[in-house]
Image (cartoon, rainbow, N blue to C red; front, side, top):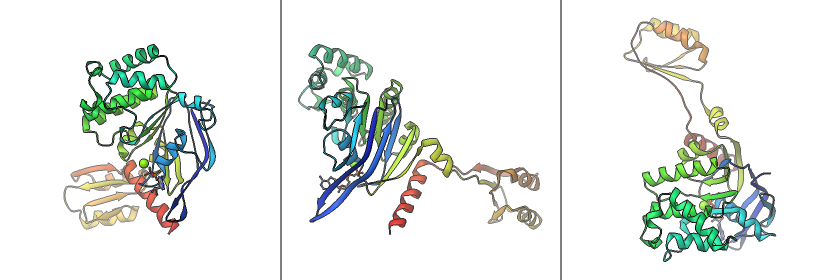
Length: 309
Ligand SMILES: Nc1ncnc2c1ncn2[C@@H]1O[C@H](COP(=O)(O)OP(=O)(O)O)[C@@H](O)[C@H]1O
Ligand SMILES: [Mg+2]
């Protein structure tokens, strides 16, 4: 069974006396243990979609199933779900970590004892035991975020929703969160992650969905998306300018020479012929053009924008 199945979600907001479709025809599914990165520019509708999945706002159309049950019809479905939403809203700042874990565990249907046990195990795992009796407002931002994760996990959900979980964290706390996220997925929990930090999405996700103007623009396995956008070009840089006869020879076999010193090879099978022509001149470097997720994202989103314009 899928941990999440969202089908044709739609949300229309009223803005300036007009109906504004914030989310349209968005379908998502996530298998147990899978991490889906849910990306898109500001205002694309990511948070609205997540709130519909979390049962916090009612969709105007479409359906949500969390491990088979509908959070809008059957509130018990929410027991299968944990969420870390924007801005740390799932913690009580005057309560201690342990009190938060007990409170939210009970809210999710656990006994106090179960919540305490599970909460203590999470505090140990997240290295927060020494702070268990310190009010949340006195913890560092990184510790608060780890506690937000613990609270979201205290009832052992099958689906975890993470909306910008590294926002405002320093480098070290961001690394901690990355390790946590990887461990949580490895334990079998399905994860829906939104982030503007695309290297994190690239590193952690199995699959990527890009949302634009409320609609799904692209959906592909992460490695597939990167492979599709990876150029096959090699770029060879020489230590010094090439002579005319070599430039002519390179042109004849179909390599491009720029500034007499940089050579682009579009077909990988040409690489060794090119190198034979260059032999024995000193090379500054040979590299393959790699597409990072950030560039792919920009390319797709700009293309999507132009298509609508
Ligand atoms: N409560 C609301 N009322 C009216 N418009 C809203 C409301 N919440 C979000 N929107 C609008 O819906 C669109 C999608 O917002 P959101 O889901 O927050 O996008 P994202 O999380 O991708 O940045 C935006 O244009 C936003 O202004
Ligand atoms: Mg958002």
